Length: 243
Image 1 (cartoon, rainbow, N blue to C red):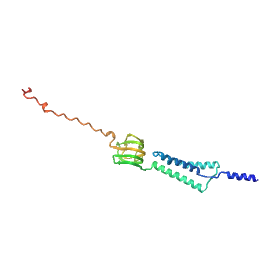
Image 2 (image 1 turned 180 degrees about the vertical axis):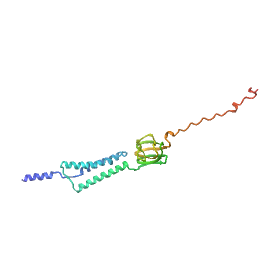
Image 3 (image 1 turned 90 degrees about the horizontal axis):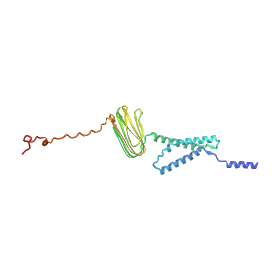
Image 4 (image 1 turned 60 degrees about the vertical axis):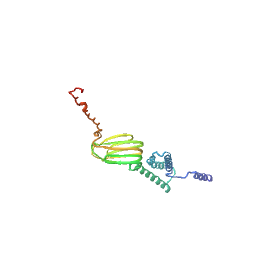
């Protein structure tokens, strides 16, 4: 009896204590966050917004951890500290997701060494660094042409041209090129430029009546020949040379 009791007590001592739910997920999040910060220190131009976009992985890991513990009969401790840890992880995931959605769909503007000009016929920007959104709206008529000139040194510039009904006339990433978009109907047309850590310049120029109606400058007419009175005048003395 005494031997059996000692063995039972020894098993209870050696038995691992229960693990609080969320500790594994917290460990993974800390490792990933530390690795991302370290990468940003060594590669400052790297786009680390993927860390925000990957925020739903926190909820996936937390759910997998809970399901595996329940299925395998693992000893998971659900006390107030474990619930608070889960609350912190869920709150962090939702906050990071909201920030990622705002950066992807919002209207934030971050630029340096930037100049901007826009009126009813042109929209131009020249920037040393542009990471965000900027837009301008033109009032155009059917048959007008909107000519875009994009010059990119690094990064990328996504361009959208849509009408007042939300239909897209252009939705592409432009680099070093010229693109002409013909306007199909009267209305307001919005040009949205989304810079992704880009440097360079762009311009959008309106041609009224269409680009094909913009005539090149005509060649100057040749000057009219002037008459030389001495060469055309008849010789004196009836055409005979003077003595």
